[in-house]
Image (tube, rainbow, N blue to C red; front, side, top):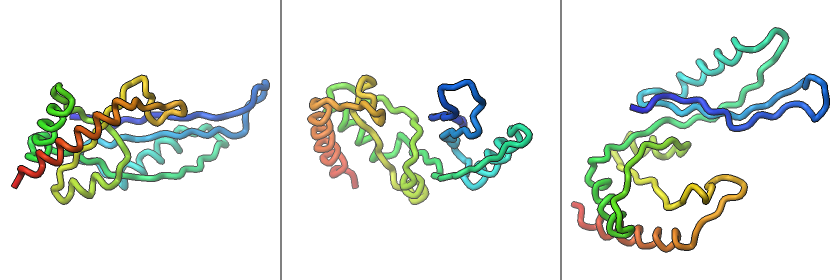
Length: 157
């Protein structure tokens, strides 16, 4: 079972001088665990942040929420997807749990619509980083995988 996590993605404060900055900013994300709801966790996060403020400090908080989702890897469509990916790539895919802020996934999960999220990026591609890249071979693999996936899904009734 995956647990909740809090990650700080950005901190900004001060200047390259020897003074205490008057303002600091941070960007963070909270990955919810199964069964948690953003409308319950958001007030708890805000309370914890406010309680940690030093005397005289103020907090301005802007929140954007997305609900967690989880799909059963034994669902027929997801089993078909693994077969298709193995056929396209020549190796069996590894099913992993991954965080992501894709609000539509929770709506699909609530309606029982199994959803496949995947890709063919390598760690050196640094996806979503300022210097990201993507190999042309990965595009070709994605095309083969999509074709195999549609063929597999067409066999389901």
